Amino acid sequence: MGHAPPGGRRTDSGVTPLAGRHVVLGVTGGIAAYKAVEVCRRLVDMGIYVVPVMTEEATRFVGAVTFSALASEPVRRSLWSEEDPIPHTTLGQRADLVVVVPATARFLAAYAAGLSDGLLTATVLATRAPVLVCPAMHTEMWEHPAVRENLATLRRRGVHVVEPDEGRLAGGDVGAGRLAETARIVSAVVALLDRRGPGTGGAPPGAPASPGGQPVRGEAAGSAATIDRAGRGATTEAPGSTATTDRAGQLATTDRAGQLATTEAAGHPSTGDLAGKTVLVSAGGTREPIDPVRYITNRSSGKQGHALADAAADRGARVVLVTTTGRPAPPGAEVIFVETAAEMAEAVLREAPGADVVLMAAAVADFRPAHRAATKLPKAGGAPRLILEPTLDILAELGRRRRPGQILVGFAAQTGDPEPAAEAKLRAKGVDMVVANDVSVPGAGFDGDTNAVVVLEADGRRTVVPLTTKRQVADAVFDRVVACLGAGGWVPVSADDPGTRRAGDMRRRRPGGDRQSWPSAEPVTGAPALDRLLDRPTDDHGGDRPVDDHPEQD
Image 1 (cartoon, rainbow, N blue to C red):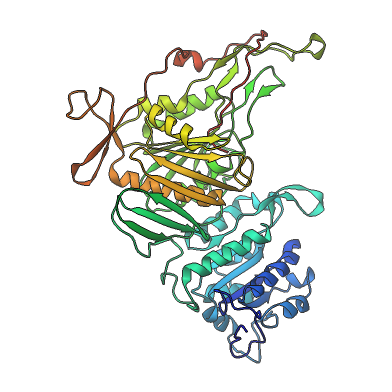
Image 2: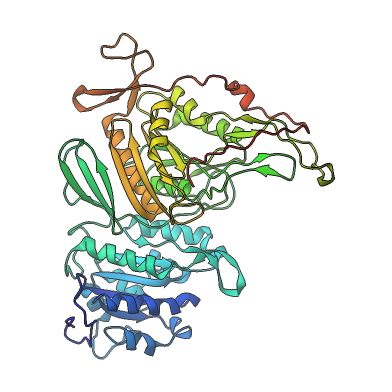
């Protein structure tokens, strides 16, 4: 039997590794409040001691008796209790975790502003336990700059966020803001409880691991590492000893204010392991026009690229995001909107010299129509014959132009085993690492919120990130980027440098002067000149070459 503390009524009858953990389940007034019932039931089934706290607005959507019947204690609703004169303090001190399902825009605003206007807001302010919020609201509210700034503020303070899904909303609308699926919320709860160890009961966030992700234990660079992110390991294999780092990723993205190229919302943090660095990220799939109506594109949603931008901003970087999508971007980021591969190349190559880190996550078309029709091609004329020409290989061009110390990351989306193609790309294009995924694996394909990748590095390291959120994948990638920055990145060496195989080789700087060689990218043969690839003529001719489009990442 699970053991209930004094004043508690029951826990689940089974004994599980989480038995006896205390979770305060906050429920606020949104249409998704009914889904918190299932979250409550699943946590109790795991042996977790669940104390529900409902706002008055929440009771308009679901009855308090429902939670009282399923939870470990009756619902708490008021700061004014005869049984406990300071219920918020008692709840906060007993909790191993506070999770709010759903978290409305009103709640997020009050929490970010530090307003203790009810029992739930007072409890999250009074606890030292981790806090996990699960936003749910209409798309227009979710994308409003005020909501994004409040979330950015909370994340900087160490609050964990489970991003909402896209899907059907109240009123029949479809879009972002739908409460995350129950399984994803429960997984995040379990991961945070696992991080804290048994029954820490609201101990400071730094024990045993802080919300900001400080290592529990680790070893010197060059050893293998296991990174625990929301219950899923990211394993780095390298020669040498092993080390374990416990770091729970923050599960949210942030938004930009309006549609201008530069956002005016809250800026990026001034601290973090990327503070003072400029990170350039490309995202989304390009569109290559056939005529003013039709175009060639791919299935990339841009979610992984935008998750990378969010992660970089949260780590303190100045972010430049070149994107084809209108998805939210981090507050303070410079956002450059493009559509075609040529526009992507122009923007990325223009911004890259000022960047410390470049991540080419965009799915750039490999081919485009050689001629764009000036008017819509009529159906009556029969199927047009499209003549295709290659686009500029932006990643290879970045590899040739890179400056010493700059970190360059490529992405490779494949069907089947992605590693052979990723290895080839790593060697051919002079990059520090390639992030590869198999889009045929369920959950790791296009337009989803999860991904599973392997990160291959030029010095032979291999980091496997099993299926998890794209934000957590982004954090795992940046863990390796930060390690690479600390090692000095890759630098070009001359032909007369001892040990160099040929002019143009790359070597990685190591502490103490040790460097490892790696061949640089060979020039592209037979490819159109750069100025040709950045120039798109307009005509109405066609051709018959098939499209061979390999997006970098979704």
